[in-house]
Image (cartoon, rainbow, N blue to C red; front, side, top):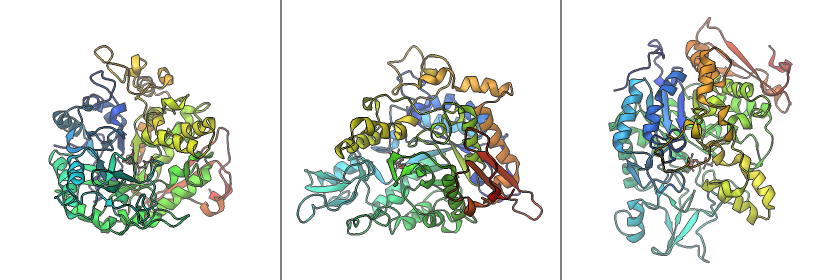
Length: 550
Ligand code: ISL
C-alpha cells in the first residue's frame, strides 16, 4: 500500500496528478547502485537498503532500469522473460519487498519496460524462428532478402551496425534497431500488443506505480519497410511511425488503472510537435517523454561520436523550445544525465576547477524548469566521467561498436578512442560512490566473489554520499545538500511547482556567446508572483545579458 511521504505535501487544492505536484523521480541503474550480496553487481536488496538516501533527498518516486530476466547483452535492455527477475538482481520476493519498503517511505516505484524489442533468447523468438506459420510466427519483423540479395532495406541500427540480421534457420532477415540479440517486436500483430498490456498489468498487480517505456516511439515501422532516401532521417520510417500514438493510447486503455499509472516514454529522434502530441493530456497517451535534443547540444552534425564543446545559449534555445512545445496540457520531464549519457558535471560543468559549484548550477537548471526532474544516481554527488585509458576498458555494446565503426571508417585509433571515451555510456555506469570504504561502499566487503563489475571511479574518496551528507547536515556547501534544497524549493513555491516557464530575451540571445542562462517561472493565478532564475555556466563572473531585460 502506498503512503505519501510526510515530507511531501499533497496539495489538495491542485487537481493535478501526483507527478505534477512538485515531486521528483530518482533514476537507478540497478547493476551499479548497491550490491547487497558481494557478487560485484548491484541488486534489488541493495536498492531496498538504500531507500533512506532517496527519502532524505526528498524524491517522490524511483525508476529502476530493467531488472527482468535477460542475457544482459545490453545490460537488461534485452529481456527474455518480462515476468521474472534476473537472478543477477534477486527474486520476485525481493521486488515485492522493495516495492512495499518504498511505499512505506512515500516513494512510488516505476519499472523500465522494454517493449519495442525482446531478447532473441525470449521463448517467443525461438517459436517465431522455428515455426513461421505458428502462433508466434509473426511476432517479429521477418523479411526476405532484397531482390538482388542482402538486407531488405538500408535501415541502420542505433548501435552502428545494419538493422537486419540473417537467420539461417528461418531463411529470412529479422529487424534489430539495437543489437542483433534485441529483435524488434511486431506491434502490428494484435497478439503482441495484448501481451504487452498483460505484462504491464502483471506488474501493476504487484503494486508498481508506473513505467518508463524504452524507445516507445520506435514501435511503429513504415509499412513495406521502404529504404530511407540518401541524406534522409529515419523519422516516419521507424521513428514516430504512423501507428505509434494509437498503439500507446490503446496500451494505456488496457491498463488496470489507466488514470493513475504514470507512463514516461523514451522518445529518441522525435520532434517538438510529436513531443506535444505524445504528452497532451487529452490524447491519453504518455504523461511525459524523455527527449533528446538538449543532450545532443554538443554533438557535431547530430553525431554523438563527434562531440564539440557545448554553448550555454544553444542549450537554452533547445530547452526553451521544449518548454514551449510542452506548455499547456503537456508536461515535460527534466533530465540531463542518465545511464546513456556522459556525466552532467563533466559535460556541462567544469569538473576540474569548479566541480561542486558547476554541478549545483546544472542541478538548478534541471530542477527549476517546468516539469518533473529525473535525477540520475550519482549526479546528486557530482559523479564525473570515468578516466578511461584504453578501448579495451569499454564494456558497453554501443561504445564498443561505435569505436569499431570509427576504425572501419578510417579514423586513426587514437582519434577514434578520443571521440568515444568522453561520450561512452560506460562513463555513467560506474558504481555508485557511497563511502570512502572499499569499493566506495558499493559492494559488501568480505563475502563477495569479486570486484565490482565495472571499476569504481578513483575519485570516490573525495566524492561520495557519506562526505556530502555530513557536509549537508553541518550546513556546509555540498552538491547533495543543494539537490535536497532545490527539490524542496520546487515543492514550496507555486511558480516552481506549476507556473509557466519562459526565457526572456531568448531570440536576441540566440547565437550570442553569453554563458548566462535566464528563465522565469510564472504564477498561474492573478496576483501570483514570478521567480527569475539566473545561472552562470562559466568559470568566471559574467554579466546578466541585457537582452534578458532584468
Ligand atoms: O543514448 C543514446 C543516444 O543518445 C542511445 O545510446 C540509446 O541507445 C537510445 O537513446 C535508446 O536508449 C534506450 O534503449 C536502448 C538501451 O540500450 C538504452 O540503454 C536505453 O536507454 C535499447 O533498449
